[in-house]
Length: 390
Image (cartoon, rainbow, N blue to C red; front, top):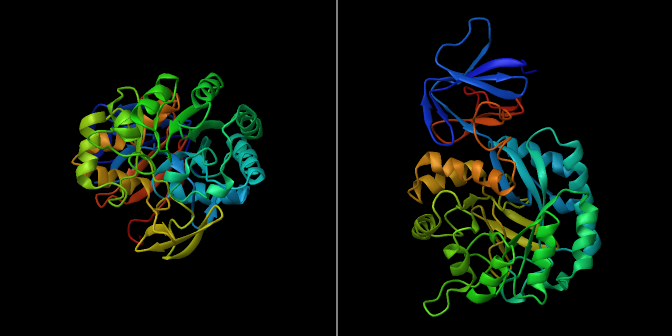
């Protein structure tokens, strides 16, 4: 049971624009109240020594963990994913579907809507993300083309209705017939559109962005890449100043030099680190399912039988570490890419995404080895790892 009013103390506190040294952060009934070097004598202190306090991480794109998947269509699966994410410093996530049959998709949307209202006990469900159904076969990746559907307003309306106000993102291939009109429709409904698993040209992607699409799904993966005579979808989302790009910084999906290239083109404000984790996350190598497709995990890397990458087993604090070390990005900026940037994308940055007075007390304690010692959601400690017992 966490006290309603307490301090947390660590060697470093990572705020959005500054890094505080040897400060305490005051939590008052689930919100951040103050930062100080001189605490009140009668308020308890959670002292984390030489660790760092970071904002709660937000995973915009995650399918599952520890044997559970969003498309299991079970609240128990959402709970398992939620608690597992809290162990890795994540305080909020978009429950992400994968291509499967239509009825299962609608059932998953309904469960996401239920979780969005009732909320699990760890990381909070910030909404749903539809990755699947409306893609191109040529860059299908680990999505089963047998279940691809026509991109139509009735399909979109049905998903929005099933999700009961929780659907936040729809990913689609912009070269699909009617895409630009339906991007406008989704945008008017408050649903953000991301472009991916597509063979769209540079021009088609530009048109989609001009009609309201917001950026690229796990950039470079599942899309037409950059050629010197054809910038493709990747070139379009990287060169558009307003487009957000999702990045899987696991050292497999994107080469370290390309991480640096993305950073130079997009800067720290338009990169969202994601895990794209599947149900194999947190488990041993072996055979798993992604939707209705067999996936094989070897040395932590998930692939289909044909060799296509199939999501990842990445955790978001490792993505931050990799972006910092492999991508040569300042740690504060790498943290922001997994906290305030996704919060801004979801238009919830006034409440979460950074450590500031008045904001919800969602934060994690990051050790020097980049492991998570504790995670708090709304000022409640939902995960703690004893430093001595690991």
